Length: 103
Image 1 (spheres, rainbow, N blue to C red):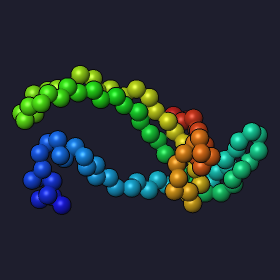
Image 2: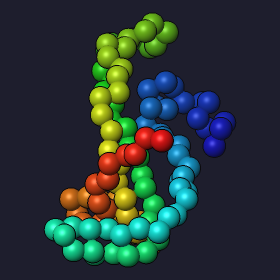
Image 3: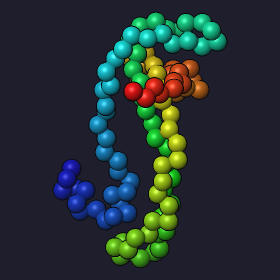
């Protein structure tokens, strides 16, 4: 795979994202919606960061210049869900919004 990625141009490599699943530690918790406990058991939290990246792309092969117009973190989300859930959607009902407690 490394050889294949090295043979690609900068623009071709942009189509590939390599990731490894992060396994957060589980904790005992209750997931509540509308004042009712919907789940009581092992939970995990997922922290997501929202960012904006705007770049200028000209039709030139030389990508050596800095074409970054904006590259900023603009928000975050913390969601909690059952350890048995692979889905992550809050709106779909699989996860619950949480508030971080800084310690």
